[in-house]
Image 1 (cartoon, rainbow, N blue to C red):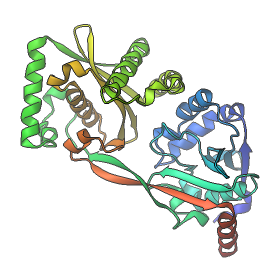
Image 2 (cartoon, one colour; image 1 turned 30 degrees about the vertical axis):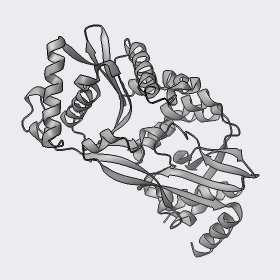
Image 3 (tube, rainbow, N blue to C red; image 1 turned 45 degrees about the vertical axis):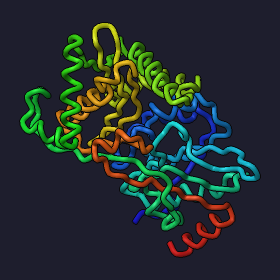
Length: 355
């Protein structure tokens, strides 16, 4: 095992410092098997630009000249505490550090050492950790994770590649529904066909702004029907998506779908394709066309596309909306690590003596 002394943590306090390492950050993300789109620089740098968090204390860990760990933290006041937490909160369903799997224990320990040297914070609160996070396995954080929230995910069948409408075994997808739900889907498709020719489109750079406008409008309309504002009422969140979407699209991560009937958009789904998983991040549909279930029809098309592209998991992310249960999605917990500074010091010191 390589000695922990050769791993060099550095605290980054500005977005310029983080931009300077963005290509190494991307390379590290590629090497981390559990990293999600929410740890990408294309996600977090626009988040910083939109929300201007202060102070930032991202920790970059190097082995020689190679980036082997990255932990994007910030601090904020909450009542009597100064909380040290992850950047990206509020709009990211999974928050985490990134750790090169070849050096997991040493890198997590280096991050802990750097945290111990950061002044002022009184409470460490790491929420929305996925079950595969190195934080839950290594260093003095081990065994202190508690369940925090629930994300819902669906295992996808493996089907032969080819045009979606000709995929052998396509009925395997339909059987994700109950018999009654399959009948409802058939009826909804028939109603839509009677109204004209519907078209499913996927955003490209030239059409991305129009797709985002449709998403913002339909998502906001959907929430206003329930008497709630919805997340996109916040101008900073809309600004974040305008900044991040072109970067994610260029990387081949963002796939933004919409269902159109003539010149009218009936539904939009914002999804992130990362490794073998599709993250269904946001959707909106036109409530005037609820009788033909445009959201369900488009969701089915997105899942078909995911199978065609060889993805094995469809993650509906957090929230207990009823539509997720229609797909028989299985709940998967996320975790939280919460430690007062004094407890953190005690655990870190104990771990250092054992290690």
